[in-house]
Image (tube, rainbow, N blue to C red; front, side, top):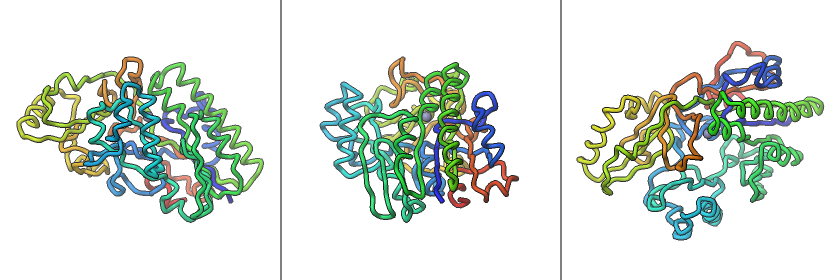
Length: 370
Ligand SMILES: [Zn+2]
């Protein structure tokens, strides 16, 4: 029995309709379709394959504060005048250090690079669930083909689109588990928003692409098919330029992500000044230990001594990911506890089909049930 697992990044449950994605809608109806409760995190894939919440595996946000970051490398910082080149150099440095999960450096200011390192450093194929299996996994830029412990890694230099990813993945033969993540929906919904024409077009395109592969699997027989998505999307209606209200001193460190801001302080005065500024902005919230527990995320100082976040519809811009006006998002995810952000889980696996009552699953529960 072979299992094809395809993650469609950003395909919210509310987007899977008869009109938008006729094939997925029908395939879900005929087999098993469930809402997949997302996480207030950017490490959903990690939670899916590890079967753990971010609180359990300790990975929530993409970067953490560290004393010795791989991105503090002089060559990485030197190329800060060009984001693309800096990313290539950053990738090269990570590969030379034998990392198998590559992080980009986005728009992290050059002076701050040395303080932050990526939290995931190893490819998902090393996780327990995949360890003893024959796996083909395309997690760009790595194409992995492994028989249990024997791992063949191929580096794909060109960025490949969804259709190229599926094509490359399924050209590999004789594996038990096939996995890749498709990125186009996520990319376009960030850029154009979920109600845009471009969103509709991308949905149709992905639906057709998935249909092509699933039709083949069904003809071939003996395939378990899993199609899931890590999160959905919400349109942005409020942009917050947090740097405008931050003190212009240099005695504290911060990281601005799209829906969170993370602070580390050297003195109390600056901390209090920022907290008092924030208290006047009703759309900005402070992450407490209780909330972190509720959202199943780790509460640790390597993610910030003070962490701010926003709820659905707000977005910190500019931030360390998007800086230029042409990078500004219209759609976003990474908000706590909101149904609109939930993803999907579709499968033809009998175990799930028999148990049709379960209409809602959690990302971290799926692996145990497979
Ligand atoms: Zn995204």
